[in-house]
Length: 461
Ligand SMILES: C[S@@+](CC[C@H](N)C(=O)[O-])C[C@H]1O[C@@H](n2cnc3c(N)ncnc32)[C@H](O)[C@@H]1O
Image (cartoon, rainbow, N blue to C red):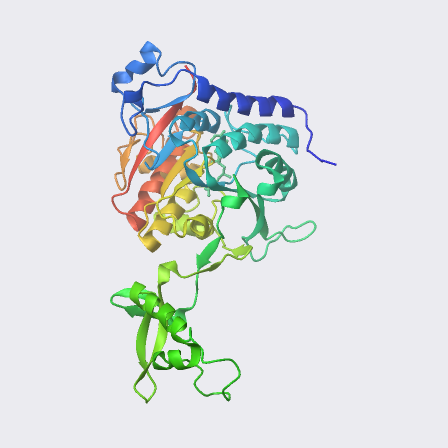
């Protein structure tokens, strides 16, 4: 018996996602030359002559120039994620290694999902085409992390099984986000869920985390190395407690034979092992050395990471966004699947304050990687006065593309707190401007000189 989730609007939601994918495969595309990754198409002309403005969503610079991004460009796409993901199919289909999303239940404008009480049906209809598109953007070995609290978790899990296939479900991680809490009706909730699916589970390698064994870390030739001195043992139980169990290099042939010596010599030649003088007899221990950033353990399913606000405070953005996720958590998730894949592309199409961009930078900082991020965020007005003031003071609005650390001039009409009562929402800084500001400030800390491009999505004009 197959059990599937049913809700009003399900067929239409699946049909929409599938149609957007099919249209992007068959619709009139750009000419070869125009597809050049990273190229900017001049003057907005393609829109006028219909080659880009053919009814399909596409991306453009804030000055209106169509922009075909390079898949490895760091991007912040401003707009509704449905047309944004559709537009990204042109350049990012099957390119994304990690998707991390933390979708909303309760936000605010026409393009955004609104929470009508516990209306699971509209939430599922909102998520369905977006998850179908996300899957289409994923590499064969790509994984998607869907971060949720109790409200939609059960429904979302069944939806995910239907979209990815239950065989491609890799399980659910627990994110412990709090230690205690006050107004609990039933019990104090200190955790969320992170459901994990693969595009193809058979292609996905284990989820890894940095090995934490500080006692065995040494700096060798200027590099932090994990050092294991007991990789070769003379034998189990042959010696009394406390006596030397290590098999010295000089004794390998006698104890384990010439084959073992050849194996060890090969690893010495490759640099995986080194010899270290040991004991009083002038002999050498065989020592395995692993660069610290490559020393890994399998990830544990419960991840403790408290307080995303603590990450925003040092950036001068404390209190500007409710419930940002901790950088440490998203970094752990990103790194777990990109441990040996440090130029992978990471996508978050519910970007919020931009935690994922900072997590990608922090992961790169750790291993000198070049992972890139693609973020999508609607330009909805910031609700909190503090947030509006901070983003407006930083010039929210004017500086839309370009390098880290460049804080733009205040846009005309971008109101600070004093404008709050008189001006309309449209004049206020938006969440996407906060996202951009956070990216710039995080780059100053983790990745000075980082370049990211801010684009807008044009929904098929
Ligand atoms: C729960 S927040 C994500 C928070 C984020 N993980 C962080 O750490 O800051 C969800 C975000 O998705 C955005 N959002 C909602 N609907 C959207 C849509 N259709 N397209 C793009 N962004 C959307 C909301 O504005 C909100 O910023």
